[in-house]
Image 1 (cartoon, rainbow, N blue to C red):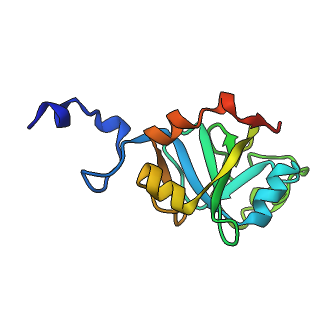
Image 2 (cartoon, rainbow, N blue to C red):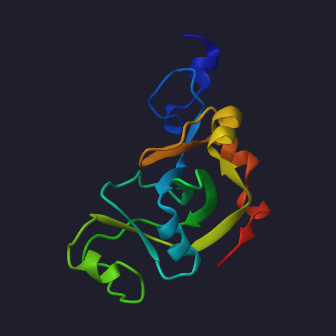
Length: 157
């Protein structure tokens, strides 16, 4: 095994092609419909609901808005997901239905929201970071998270 391969920590890579970009487990790109992204931006939606549980060290959700936007527009800071019955807060869209056990199995609390200075379009995601638009979710590339730090984004809330 070459030094380059042995020095790459598997804790920072996802499965896939060995020539793919190095991934980080703390940042996930989530596909989301623009209407739900809009509800997050206005704070009407304070949890992101998913059928699947992400890795326990996930701290940020990069929102990839599906058509017609086709770009990453925002980043959400989150914590460990809640399960049905744990939210007990009627103020957010979908919270009561989730607590009643309808729909998704996991709810990721939205703790903070950041807006990218420029949306990261599908073609830029592919060309600059070797990543395709997610179908559901994918872990972000290390290069993307380093090139687009939260400190350089507008904090919405």
